Image 1 (cartoon, rainbow, N blue to C red):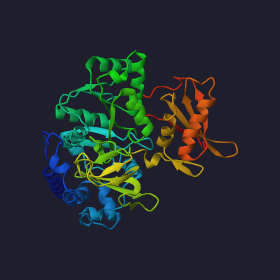
Image 2: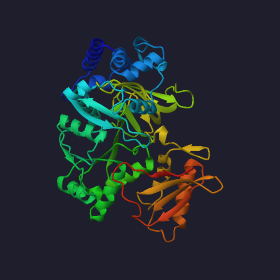
Image 3: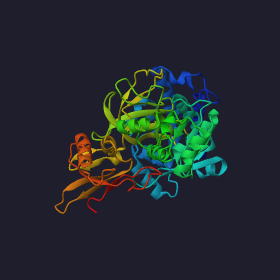
Image 4: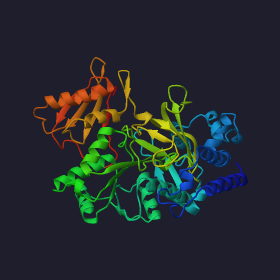
Amino acid sequence: MTEDRAAATRRAYMAVLEHYRRDFAAPGSAEYWSPSLETASRDEIRAIQNAKLEKLSPFLYENSAFYRRRFDDAGMIPDDIRTVDDLPKWRPVDKKEMVADMAAHPPWGTYTTHDDAIWNSRGWTIFPTSGSTGTPRVFRYSKTDLDYWKWANSRALWSLGARPGEKVFLVVGFGPHVWGWGVLHALAHMGVPCIPGGGLTAELRCNFILRYRPTILATLPSQLLRLGHVMRDLGHDPTQTSVTKLFTGGEPAAGIAATRRRLEEMWGAEVVEFYGCTEASPHSGGFSCSHPVRDDGTVQTHLMEDIQVWELCDPDNDMAVVPEGGRGITVCTNMNSESSSHLRFVVGDYTSFDTAPCACGRTHVRALGGFQGRADDLINLRGVKFYPSVVEEGVRAVSGVGDEYMVRLDTTAEGIDFMRIEVEHADHAGPDGVIAAVRNAVTSRIEVRVEVDVVPPDTFPKTEMKAKRVEDRRGK
């Protein structure tokens, strides 16, 4: 790859991104940050995607050794991928390929278009993946990426109701937490004040809420539950605080009806969310709008199609594209980054799509039912497959069960796999009723009998980061 072609394709790609980056500095209307993009016709959206794809393929080929090898190995050239209709020609990229590439080319790998020259002259930061499985992949970003992140996240935050005059309490650890940093920079871009809540005890965070009166509480779902209980322990009713929106990311919440209901009843506030992944959608890929729940109770999440192409593929049918209305796993082509644009990266969450206009007026595709788990997290118990979020739905549906619980998968001496759920409940001394309720609630959802143990409240440590509630000890 020659420097001249690398530089020329980079300039061409960044020029087309800049051309379609409308309303960067300020919102274009009271309802939409970028009204001409967010209410564009389906034909306009497709034209924007095609214009970016035409420049993306040669950019990746000339600036990423990983993508050059992939094109060459497939016997393809960049001109083979010029439009959305061409995408199925390209085998989706999965995280295992990135892990292997990083192992062969430490410490950064060659799967991004960010090199040492950019890092040393105008680098911004790094973010490693924080998923539940595998070796973290690390990504370097430039100052140019920061501008595109601020713009995309500002559009999404505007959609879910963040405005000047609101105050956001952002409760994250401010380590390499991609969601928290992206939100922080976007809020500053929007002129919406942000109160940082990292490094504080739960009691201090509750005192911050009472003292500084934020209207939007932004953190992981498990942390929202924790703070609600601590607020009550301090003698305060969470529903009477200043908080009107619960803004979540990093874990499923909005799409798990029992968890969403528990949070909204606890705080007297609406749950809204961001959706994405570090690899291909580190800023907001999906986001709530003013109509996050349909009349039939189905949660819906917008996906930002002018900066990404979202597909659903069938992992059991050679990753064939699933038609609208079908269910598949998410695959993202990101076209909003100098450093980490990708062709067909497997994000891997099951959902279904709807491209009909939303009641909020946006025309971009929506994921129906939320995102309840990555394909990597799928549990296979005696031939029955289900997500941990389905177990959570059952556990949360039982009155009085604590917020923390554990799912343990093990094998009997006879070689039979089984699942045991441990829950906290005040009736732990006489647990028969709780055991029956939890077993029925979970079994009815996954159609596999489970064992249930009831332990005293506060047995399990309180979740401070992403919850790890499944321990698989089978075959160990």
